[in-house]
Image (cartoon, rainbow, N blue to C red; front, side):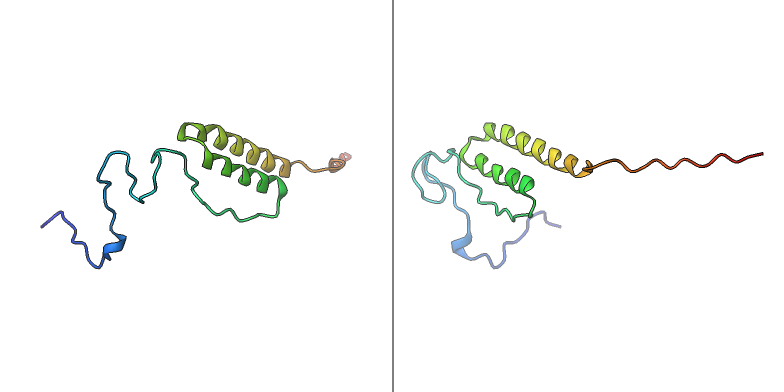
Length: 105
């Protein structure tokens, strides 16, 4: 039994190659390969303005180094948690309390 897996049907143009020189990126773009790059993750609007604003805030992480992502993610998480908590609060007066009538003996 062999632990190797044969590569079958992988087109040459889709094969990943390593850069030849340090600092040279795989995709051929010049510049710092460790520089922040947009993730281009699609965000579908939910129809809830609070939630949509928080999801849009995620795009701020696209322009930050990795160590700056935590602050953005925590802010988004806090905002989404607040939006969910707001759904639990009901506007207007609270429902009347029903107390059972005392039974007479």
